Image 1 (cartoon, one colour):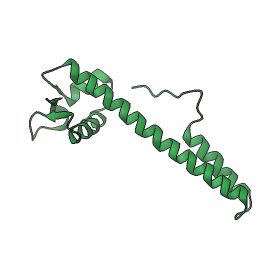
Image 2 (cartoon, rainbow, N blue to C red):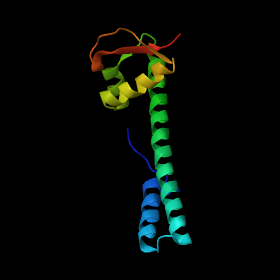
Image 3 (cartoon, rainbow, N blue to C red):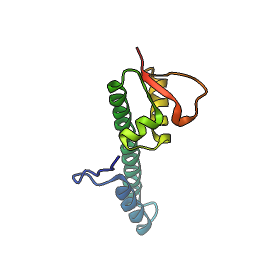
Length: 120
């Protein structure tokens, strides 16, 4: 999966870095210092939001893949189809299973061999 950056948005880490650099260049306790800390926190929150959104997009792709194979698919098969690592696919499937959207076919399999299908 390729990571794409929206050119119309300044990435969160850049905002956080600018806020932190400004905080070190002004006098502590001043209004500029407080604003710099606010910008830093805003950048960090934007970064966490981007990471969460990336996970949701990945989960959606896993569900779409499982919808194409009604008999279910193994973690390795899904990863190969979506160009994702087994651990990444497994994390998505664990979240989806916890939400009741997918079902683990059999217990006790190794990670790449676990088979999942969409829930009924």
